[in-house]
Length: 125
Image 1: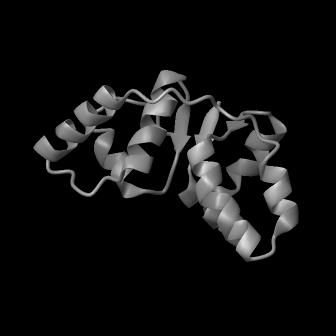
Image 2: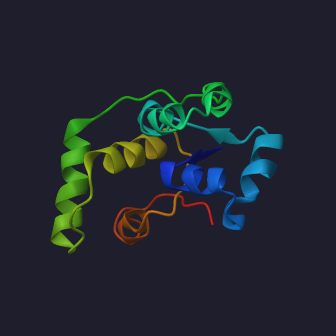
């Protein structure tokens, strides 16, 4: 399974060729989403009146979230100690969610590439 981050979805909706694997992953039923990513995407789609996309994205499998705040704090401490600053809580929660469920993250957000050097997790490439 691949948890597709908001940054990738936005590029997909724009038609960016770097996201063409999404169609293959959809066909293979390998895509999932979580409530944070939905909360980031759905307002964008609704304000642009892209109601069909809004409906379609709501049918993706939703990965349950179990936020462990101590783990989030540890990840952020590791980031700061290693000079990775300004990582927002949503990204840390998305990372923790993927790690808990042992799934890959597909993102264009540079914070994830930096964090992967100190916190081992699976990135889709």
